Image (cartoon, rainbow, N blue to C red; front, top):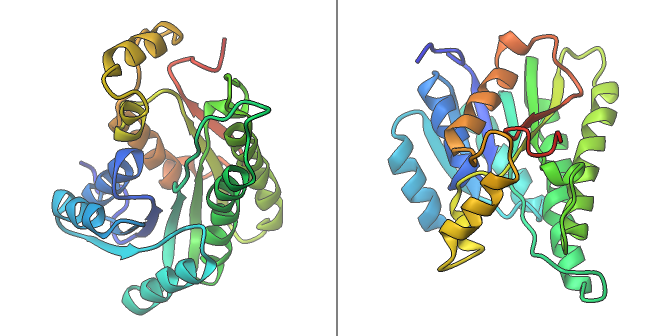
Length: 248
């Protein structure tokens, strides 16, 4: 590792598992002090044990503003500032038009949109010079699938938040970008098809020009680039890390 984030402070929501965990682990290995958040304490405890040094966990439901405020209260007490924010918490369940419920819409947007908005807004007073904000998007922002309209709409909203915030933060030297992974081998993906994991991975690989799904570490490497000074003039983009999945 190269200590790319030496002496930096990072916040990674949804950092207990999957892509969030991989990002937090890579950031810590690169010298950052990382705060991870999530809803399940046991998952957070396991993540802290896996990451090792330079990490602290705060139990947070990202759909709740009070929880997000408490997270940044802890950050303020411990480090006083933030250099990198990764708004990674998100989720959703498939629902075809005609079967969508009010609860599904409310929960998806509460986490994927409201949670992203307030994860970033509450960080603003703590953001250091040349801070990087990374919003985790999805290839569904451009390539839709059956029964994914609500989730896809929430991720399209995330894309446009980044565009607007790049303008709103003009003059502060704060960069805002979206990182949109393609199919990635995570517990969440595998858990969506219990007993049929191999078939799911094969189907997704067949839809991807590189012929495979991503590993979480590959998404983390892209997040590291966006967080680093190497991306100092990268702002307002949607960075697809998808093996070409949404590009054809």
